Image (cartoon, rainbow, N blue to C red):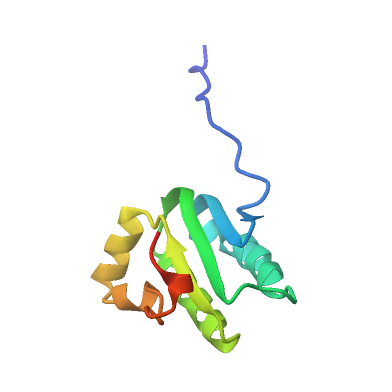
Amino acid sequence: MPPPAKNKTAPPVHLSTVVGEVLKIEGQLTLANMPRLLSETEAYASQATLPDCLTIDFGQVTDIDSSAVALLLHWRRRAIAMDKALRYVHLPSNLLSLAELYGLSELIQCPDKSNPLCAPQ
């Protein structure tokens, strides 16, 4: 008799959802999901009416790997190129630990801390 099936939840259809002016990321933030997540976030960034400070919420992220640090840096470069501030909220502790390990903690913080739109939540 085969072992009982593990109760796995299906991956979300989308890895990102826009709620108001916040881009919410959910599910696994791993190398396997990067192409889909990059496509979704590029579609978000191409909107004509983006807020002055883009907020990305990681509150629903379930798993990360080191590719997540590269993604945060990519988003930071895109925001700077678009002349937008960028704020990450609810970053998982393991992602913060990876950024610290790589010496990149300062690069994932809002670059303009005097901007009230980027005040921490």
